[in-house]
Length: 270
Length: 286
Image 1: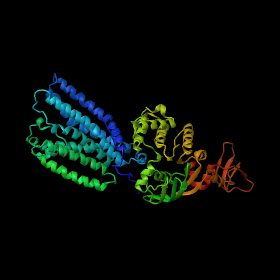
Image 2 (image 1 turned 180 degrees about the vertical axis):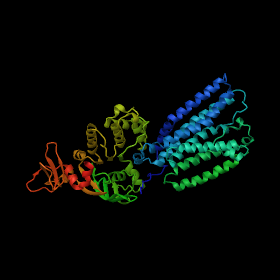
Image 3 (image 1 turned 90 degrees about the vertical axis):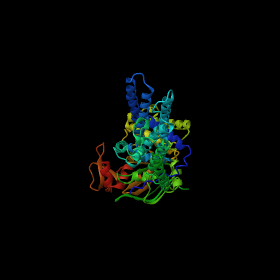
Image 4 (image 1 turned 135 degrees about the horizontal axis):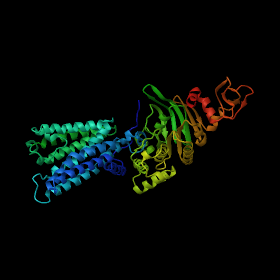
């Protein structure tokens, strides 16, 4: 039986390697063709649709940016992060990279941290959206900062689920399957929008301002952001749990995060 | 004083297949070549020396440290360069980007110093002119040199090269020999190969592996000496020869127990290797 030697040292004693590697991973994700192509595609489609409405009213621009932020950036980051995280395996480069002082678990952590790059892009998008919604008379669907936080959180969460999928499901087609499950979850939540629990537990949702559903109103957007943040941290913990070192600590952290996600999921309900 | 590489009775099995059945050897500064037929355990042994595989039993000491101990393993990895048998690449990266990425994994974090080191190793393997090309766009020989370049990052004290000349044309093989020889002047290099000419050309020590055991460990001259008086030239194949083949000059080179009065020839490393590992090696080299 093959016994690969585990990475040699603590994740937390990496000095400057981890931030340097995280920046390199962020650049890889942001420059990934999948990310750029999907972004270009959405901007093109969204731009054409907005232009067809005539002079772009702020409401149309805000709607386009909301859909871009919530419905697009997360899935695009998911695929880009998955491909970056699985690139060493797909390139059969793991053996030579494993001989480096920075092991596979540290590389995974660096990829997770590198997702702060796309998250920063999504945050800029959310800020632009906030400016569009609040530069002038208030729009009826203007979103609060906690609602806008869904955009960077969906981006971060999408990427982290992509990394976790790369670590735990190392076969072709697995990312498509995971994305299908996520979309099915969202569709299920929309179909069951009479039940707040299903609606609010979905991994991403549009602002209640865009829907008439009573199920989407009255809940706490702050707790919803906390719920999504817990899911993000759970995904990164799951990715790191693929490796032996620090397993007990990670399992304990995972248990705490499950509890916090459940608490936030309950507290967010109307 | 301990040698940089010490291998004691190392065993390894993969399910029912015995990859290493008690290999022993030491390697000091200079180039040590591992020779052996396919399945002899060379790659398994080199992966252990690269600290990516643990032995089932036996003991390894690398650079005076024990790779089984996490802290010592990290110290070894910081002083190690490894070129695997089938190196993998992020093909979308440029040559420079890939080597730079590995440099970060090797904890070279200062951007300016790291880039200078990447340029140095790319120069050393003659890849500076193509450093901006994507890996998918360069030839197989160049990719092999990219893999060697990443193994040389940080001037490692111990360099592990698994069949570095496999699949290279003669000119590139000579270039590789030159590079490996230069590295071996100051550091410890352990390489595996099927090519006895490579060993004869650059190795100060040779270890012959067969069925997971080290059959011989010593200098190439000592290995050749084992074949003295057992190689002869004749017009025909001799029935007493273990192996025989007709040379370009029309004479048959017989190796084995030489009959009385045979015209003895100076043995080569290949002769000695073939005598040592026997028919299985012949099947591989035929």
